Image 1 (cartoon, rainbow, N blue to C red):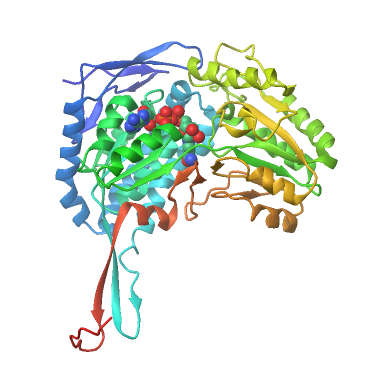
Image 2: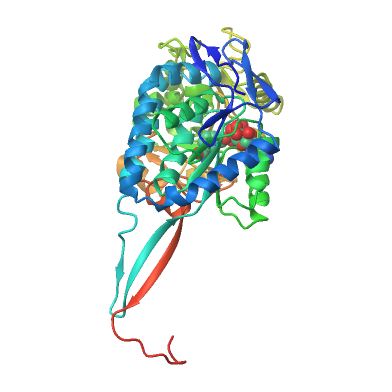
Length: 491
Ligand code: NAD
């Protein structure tokens, strides 16, 4: 039995799972609300033991045939998958905007094109995966990248379409079969991904979607010993749980986690440029893992930077993400609104000063004013912990050494931004302990480049070859060039 589709913003979307090439309903369901106006969008199926078992069995069954194809044979399926995503662009944009509060303009111009590229790019780059030999005097090494098996992909609500395709692209292109567990606060675009895969003719079981909560559906999936890989993006506490569950079966995990990234403004920075980029940190209402949320500004340019940034912030349009003019949308969930404002209230109670913002925005219950706090100590809660809302902090420094010490002075190490004379900023950027850092820019993400964090921001890298290294079992087939003479002294 399948459920009737939900009608969200005029687009039909299935609330069911997608297992073995078919829609599957379950009796247990969870309610889904829009962050825009808290209206009930419908009920989505929650996967229990039978759906989890069915999805793993389907993915296992599909694996031998899918993995036996060459990358060139898989590529047309994946190119069609990307095309089918493109065919659903309008629906994907509207659904993720209504469901997750992501700006419609960003969906249209950034996320959907990127989702298609995520699939297409890895399909293309898998073509030379089996052709990376190593030749030495002694031997010819055939270095194989064999698909690992059934991959579980778990994604968060702040960028479900982008992050799901970022993992599905390389996992499928390398020959794995996949089970996607979408975020329960924003599951709808992942349901449309299943429609796209189905229309593209992906064989049954190659790509499965099991909807549900993390604590139930997600936990069952990552604990299963038949899983070959877990690729997770989300919060630190969940990552620790998953790493333990998967670790019990020695299943490798890729963990892309939270951030508390520095945004450094050196004395020789282009202040107007830094401030314009700084205002981008409020995009998606600050619910962006890689945002530079800790502003570290040279004391001599502090006042001019604050004035330039305030001018930018005063021009920001906070409102309905479906309005293409909106720059700052809603917070995902009422619980998250309380969490974000709790951070602000505790910081102010502890002596921090608000430069701007600090309260709910008049536009609606789930909107928060772009906020900046200053007069902070490095060990303050708000400096040390990820807020995941439109709340930034500002500290000053007097030297490069101090800037680097402050930048490195948290347990996170995901991203960073460094504004200054290019040579100077590049030198400082290289001293920041982080997975990546942008010099005089923000958000440039080439698919060939590695992405991931250090310290509490993650384990492992995805992107380019790093994705294939994770989703594959690398094997060295060693063929000697000269006749081999067996000897116990041979090394
Ligand atoms: P979360 O950890 O609460 O949930 C993420 C996903 O994990 C969801 O699908 C959830 O259902 C699932 N989950 C929860 N418990 C689980 C369990 N026990 N077993 C299996 N799955 C489980 O994170 P969130 O609140 O949805 O997302 C926000 C976090 O994600 C922030 O910390 C943010 O920084 C991080 N994030 C990181 C990146 C990155 O690339 N580094 C990108 C986006 C978001």
